[in-house]
Length: 155
Image (cartoon, rainbow, N blue to C red; front, side, top):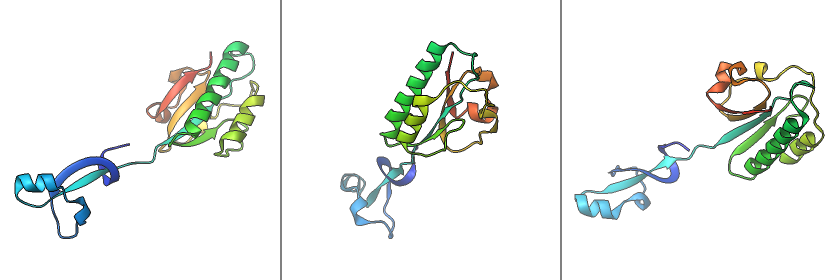
C-alpha cells in the first residue's frame, strides 16, 4: 500500500475546502480551529500482487530433503497468500498458470526435480512482487527481477 491521494481509509492530509468536495469529508475539528472549511483527503490503497515462482532445479543438483522442504514451504506460502488480500499468481515449469490455489498445490504434490531449462531467464518484469524458489545463486537471478523479489534458496 502506498500513500498516494485516493479513496483509501488512511488519512493523507487535511486541506482547504474546494467547491467540488463532498460535504461528508469536511473535518469539523480542523474547520473550528482554523476558522475556514477544511476537508480530509485519504490515501489510495494499491492492490498488492504477488507472484510465487518455483524454479524447479535439475535432478541431482540439490539434496532430496532440501528439495522437499522447499516444496513444502512453497505450498505453505502459496496457501497463506492465496487467502490474504494479495492478488497471487503462480508460475513453475510445466504448470498451466492457473491463478487458483488448488491446481498449484496439486502440481506441487507431484513435482520432481527436472532437467528443463530455468524459467527465470525468460521471466518478464511485471508490477508483481516475486517469491522465487530456486537452486540458482542470487547473483544468477536476472537484474530486472532482483529488485522486486525475495529469493528463497533450494539447497
